[in-house]
Image 1 (cartoon, rainbow, N blue to C red):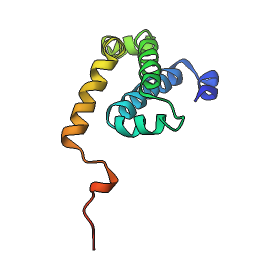
Image 2 (image 1 turned 180 degrees about the horizontal axis):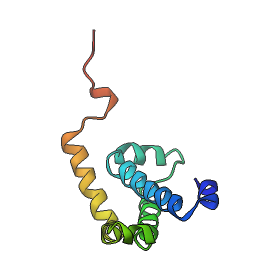
Image 3 (image 1 turned 135 degrees about the vertical axis):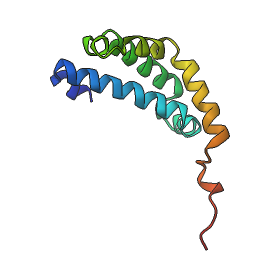
Image 4 (image 1 turned 180 degrees about the vertical axis):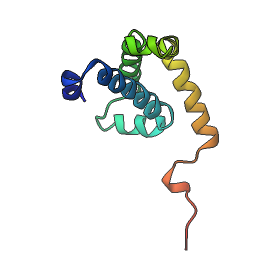
Length: 108
């Protein structure tokens, strides 16, 4: 993605950075337990995703496309409250989603 960003138009950069923010929030929010387990084996930890997501949402919030689409406030709020939103997604995933492979019903 870094290579894509270096060659991207302004509108493409907006979309790429929004995607990075969204992906960081999704991975650290919905798949937080998996992210924590993988970090023990050297993968990026939750803090990495928080920093990357927050930074990209901040950059997107100040982008002309965000202002034109009236999304600058939304992205600014996501940047400022990334951790709060992530924790809310953690709770949602814990309560409503059963993503643990060991708890799946058998088909046989």
